[in-house]
Image 1 (spheres, protein in one colour):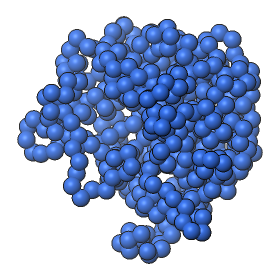
Image 2: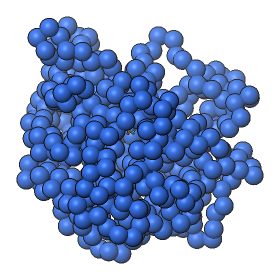
Image 3: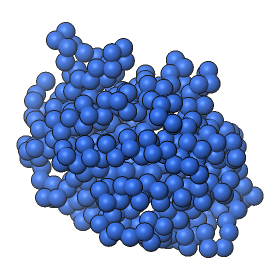
Length: 457
Ligand code: IFM
């Protein structure tokens, strides 16, 4: 750690929540146990060539069976909150209709274990594992999926709303829409711009309807929001074309989701740009989407520097690498000040009532040293630099209430399989044995003392 990074004390608000996160398909395993139905990720990962090394989430971290040990480790890390997602096909194997009580029971056990350990649960309703039966009927491109999501949301809220008081509807609708339906890198692996845009609208609609439904079901203690991956976009040059390209990138990655949620409209410039690809929007949809939320979840990883590139057909641009910058294994630029930039922008332009950083973290190659320790100093530096930016934003008035480090343990990183590690806890892929990394110990101490360990290297 470089000497100039050292900070001794950094006070966050008294009731600030420090947590960590993971999602169902990425850690649970038990893909076909106790009545669970297949999800699009079961099908996608079982198709050779879709995931690095043909890895699957069949076993993942075996959290389904080891959740007790995992919650113990979370308590050891002094986590105050844990963000997890509920697997829709574990609860409703066919996506609708008959409820699988054994599936609900798993989450009952997990929530109880968390509460007993004094860790606040935050549940995400949809983190990418759509029941395959619903995909067979058109998936998120089919408007019926919105209604099915609403029914599923009310079943789980009914089951856990008494004990889980932080809820989010959809995780990263941009990634689901474009990563899964235009770039084809994620399940269901489609490559069609019109479908991607229709999916984005249905995801937003599903979010709005779920918020309305959960609110009608009552319980004022429950806070409901959505989680967006937000990315500051900077032009590669001062030229007008690069500036326009940056504005388009911002339009389709950030404003396409923020504007309807907070301002009740899709951005005009993007409607014009997408032209006849604009999704079917029915009367009343936008009003539903802009139903007020209690908080916005922000997943922040990197910024993009873009240049105009007319032969790229969807959006007419491409990202370019920044000389001298550090990059993670995913090839994402490490850019902590982007977190501050996004938070200040949200406060100034969209005024969310509250914000949580629902994901922030980095994947670097983690190897055990000769003593068996995982000395992931780069991850510590990464987190420290981002915490500083979050703190700066709070001092300027951003209503930031909590921070969830991604991820609590090494997990199935979607199309990269197990080749990328994000965890505070190392998972041995042969034995599934867990070992707290140095970053986990550092985070524990930070949570307890709100103080960075200033060790010079
Ligand atoms: O692992 C993912 C997570 O599932 C969604 N947000 C980004 C993370 C890192 O790629």
